[in-house]
Amino acid sequence: MDKTLEIEIGDFETLLISETDKDILILEKNDNFLKILFNGKIFDVVVKSSDADHKNFKINVEGYDFSVHINESIDQLIKKMGFLKVKSNTIKEIKAPMPGLVLEIYVKSGDQVDENQNIMSLEAMKMENILKSPGSGIIKEIKVEKGDAVDKNQVMIIFE
Image (cartoon, rainbow, N blue to C red; front, side, top):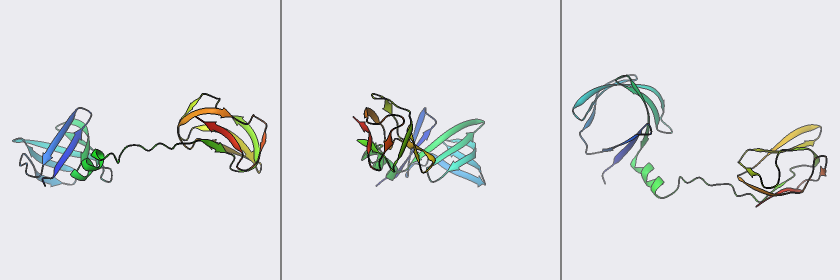
């Protein structure tokens, strides 16, 4: 099987390099400086920053800066199979994590909330605790009001 690298250069160009391609060749490497032969032309390249774990690089080619992301054959297969699709946290309700007093409610029925958005503040053991949304959703009903005392596991908010 022919291995192919897919190199995304900024938002405007994708370069496909096959294992059998002889069009690209690293002629010289010295720390972050490279001399590359590509399509019969020699380019001076400086690797300005690299995140090898995520295959993201910032490079400078002949005075021009580029963001580069590399997709190897396995990355392309994973994407094709749909494993990179973001899994959304489906939430149905928010329950009180502990007994306490509702100090503030930052949302109302019908609001669209995002994951980690502040939902309400709850006082428990003389400390203010900010409750955040565990996922994205639309608030269907708020079952408590500011000043209400709540018990542990009491349903406070219901999502659509």
